[in-house]
Length: 305
Image (cartoon, rainbow, N blue to C red):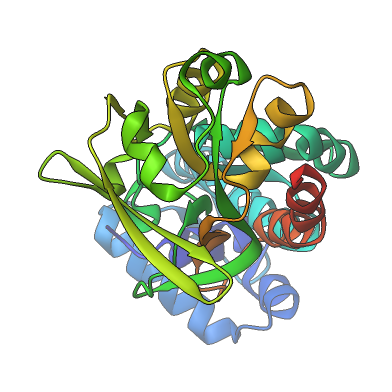
């Protein structure tokens, strides 16, 4: 493709009605302007300007070419202005990937506040439990709950809050099958397990009581990698589940769930957000990260029992 700068220089000569005036307006030497326009004419194989000592006039080909040049130049100027606008005020799109239950529990209550504060920002939220590749799928931010934060090349991870995992079950289920008094009693009950705890069809739960650590091996009736499925199954009396405390707090307060063996709990899950390294980050993405870092820890703490 030819150098688009030549189109700009040609248009400047036309707009300012001569090489001398165009040179003063653009800060480019008159002789250089003349050479660039002449080179453009040579590449096109037509004369664009009629030159005299007193005036520069468009030829028929020049008039047609100038008309098209204006469209290109205006489009380029608009492109530059759009980037300048993005860099000076939060606007445009922010793409977020968030685990479904985290979106429902923590993000949904605070997201309207952000959008009211930044009316020019559009938010596209992928609320699902699939693990996305931020760089390849062009997400700006991901929010996940995991036992630990793994380092990822090209990404920044920031902790939003922590949530211990507790044992819960439906009060109706416990009234029917009995409330366990010790860890060994869990083997007498049905178990709801996540995929991460499963190995050879056996769920391994590592539980702590002060300085005591025990690994309980159980055969689950239901296995799901979706925390929402686990939560609903526990509420509907399928069995005992081991879940992050903030995610079950509402059900505990509503007496839809009851904590089992409250002296025991599992390692804390870390709720964190990840995003590409901030070099060249747009204000829209930066404003969202700052907002989440302020408001999401409070939302997680509020949901804790």
